[in-house]
Image (tube, rainbow, N blue to C red; front, side):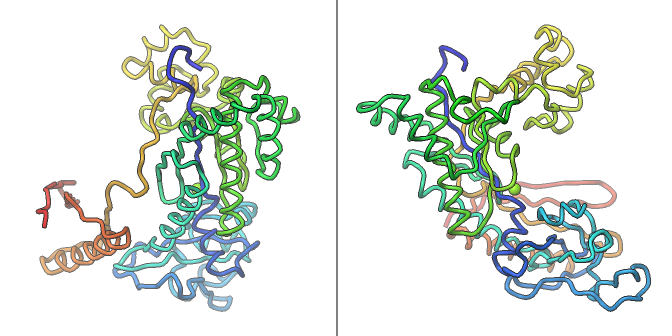
Length: 413
Ligand SMILES: [Mg+2]
């Protein structure tokens, strides 16, 4: 788009579908096709029992007729108040939402299967999910051009900058063929990818939406082909479900991956960007979902991207002040943020809160809990290929007095 700038980029975002539930179904295929939630431990417990990923972690119930939840039975291990952190599509269809307790879930859906998240070091142990997240990343990376920049954004989300690789492929191909022929063959290759092209008219065939077959459109189309082939390998070989988005920047790629879930992908082309963004609420945009986004919505008295785009930019600047230009850019689908070459998180942390009667009151108590947290960090550094930390931050929250933290470099050995 913005003429005179660098060439258009091709960026993809992959988001795993109900990732924790997907991993649980992989470990226990009996869960496939059934309503499943993954629940956190009961946070009011003083000590959390260690339950490894390979133990049976399905919460069981006592027979009917026990106090509060007599209609459906009570959970035998006191974990009925554990909150759900992941809900699969079958459970969503039954009306279950994230954050509901196991009891709430059972009240709504008698057949719900509640799987407890693995625990270790007195808190949730996400190692199994990280492991599969890494496998997905490695699989996708192995199928992308070697020039691809890969950013692992979270345990189940990743960005790929395919610009360089695609440019090299197209340069080579265009020595012997035309954009038109390439577009046709890429559209054929796309047939197994469950690919949608974002826009307000779903009934137009993909090839018509991609026309004119400009270099930029064909580059994005090839991005969609590569993402589709990568996703199919993840779905078929790793048996994990994921969705994808392809666009000219991170903002549009991420928007795309959320547009047709699960197990589908969405290509956001420049021609349709304005139409795709206009009806959306502002809070859908990355970085406008929080406090700043709320201020913007109040200052401009609208929830809607299209209305902001239609305003005189001077009005927006006067009302929003600092940051107005970045808001205008985002609302117009412009985002220069690079895909950061990063396959592991920059920092590793472990924390635990001790509420009410569980508060730590003595030095030995603090020491023993700190040791547990540090053991967790050491194990994760090792799991991550033997990373050696260079800095350490220790944060404490006390009552009264609030939070305090100290940062320091660690000696190199
Ligand atoms: Mg996800």
